[in-house]
Image 1 (cartoon, rainbow, N blue to C red):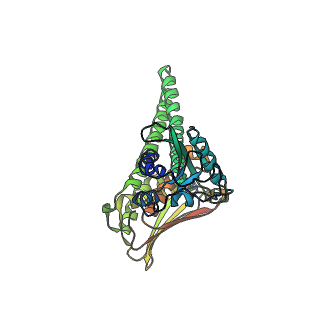
Image 2: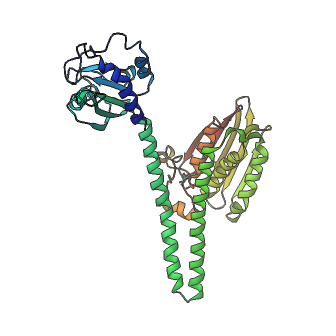
Image 3: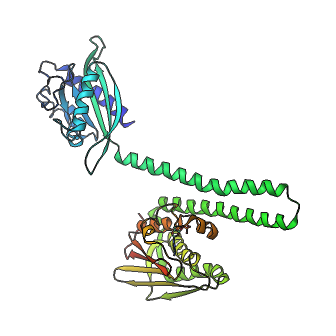
Length: 376
Ligand code: ADP
């Protein structure tokens, strides 16, 4: 879209430029040469200024492919016009386009802070088409961020499909087996499995909705919250599951922790951390939930004495769908989305979250939220 619009602007604006063909153009393919054909006054002219503020690189050549104009964005995007990978490619494409050939490709700039550029080359026709090709234009667009977002979205869709496929496949198989089963014991067992798998699909969908709500939450949903009250409610909700496994949850609340924040997001963050502490504790274990505040803001900490996270996985547990041990999380009903919800909430409130863990002896997650937190 942006490129099409740019081509139209260039065609309009540079009809003017190429109309002034009295000035000698740079020799075809002369990568290092300054664009000599740019008419005096163009840079100060209306067209010149317009082309310089467009966030796209624009390089124009005469009918031999020799550069006659380039805007400041093109200079910023191209490594070197003399011997750079992109610079040389642009010059080559201009020559080809001046001979009538169009092209469109993506190139990666060399070096550590590599960028991905879309390079589109087109011949330019005279206004009335009577003299055929009168020059060529190359449009350069930095598509690094767009490519990154597309790849994150592709991965996400692939992950969601994969995560849903497993329980849905199991449901279909279980239902098929159930239809042919007459033994009441087996029917009971199959029904229980169907219930578990359905709950699993439900949890994944609930977590996905939580994530999308958090990402789309608007700042006006922020209110002054009593976090101690919220933490108590969260603990109360998780307690029945913990008690079934003999796990005790201790709530330690320091001085009154009040914060301007989103209620739904805070509950979601606390619930995910307390549920994880219980899920990954051994039966009879102990979980401590701490809350306090000081001049810097609020500290919320959940510590358990459970299975812990292996050192190599600590960096990755906040990624969407990342689970340390898939077999174990299937048992616990984990979706792999809990910690990424936590991280999103904390970041949206300008805070930070750290997880420290020793395999076999426990995990502590510390959330710090600044006093003036705001939902981004
Ligand atoms: P899940 O829904 O699978 O629990 P999370 O995103 O909440 O997903 O956590 C990602 C992974 O991190 C979990 O699968 C688990 O392996 C590990 N993990 C999270 N919290 C803890 C904890 N308190 N103790 C041990 N492992 C944990």
